[in-house]
Image (tube, rainbow, N blue to C red; front, side, top):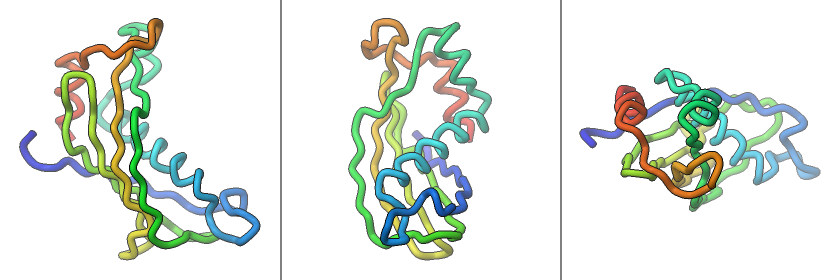
Amino acid sequence: MAGIKTFSFPVRIYFEDTDSGGVVYHANYLKFMERARTEWLRSVGIDQCHLKHQAHIMFVVHRIDIQYKLPARFNDDLVVKSELIDIGSSKIEFRQMIYRSEEMLIDAHVDIACIDSEKFKPVRISSTVKQAMESL
């Protein structure tokens, strides 16, 4: 791929996102990153419902390597930055970072697999879908 593709998605922290210590519960960062990847797909014209029901493919998390650097707190405005690192034949690699202003809170590497929506087996990403993803 020529150059890294980046997509930014804003997130506001609500009280429900926090734990008893008043910081964002660790698993919620995974939700924020999932939302960012979903909105990235929408931004390039990919409808996941259409993919599942018409093309019979889905994108699922295969692996996540995450580093928690700093906590987010109630009412923080965050930005999830998703960098498309590589698109393989059936795998997409991302680096996702969550920032509060200039402070990096989360640094994660995420591998997404393309699977058959009925058999749950890996399948190739179509050239049409790849082209849309690379258009960002």
